[in-house]
View 1 (spheres, rainbow, N blue to C red):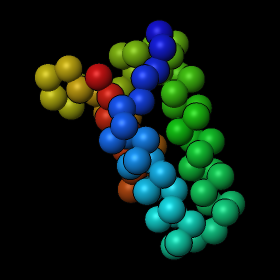
View 2: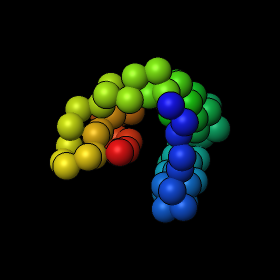
View 3: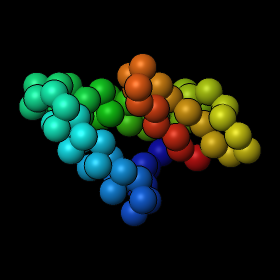
View 4: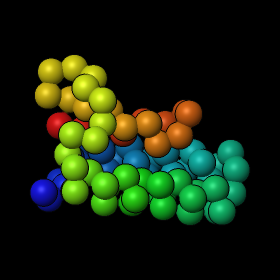
Length: 71
């Protein structure tokens, strides 16, 4: 399975990274980047990994304050 990021998801991802860097530090930002990358690798192997959220949309919790939605 190939992951394709929408334009909105790319913008949101970088906004979240900026927000993390603003509130905390580069170490926390790198940790979040790693979490997202590992989640994407898992999604490529198993697209049904996330819980159903709504019609054709699934959700993966990345952190207690951040989730990733995909279809």
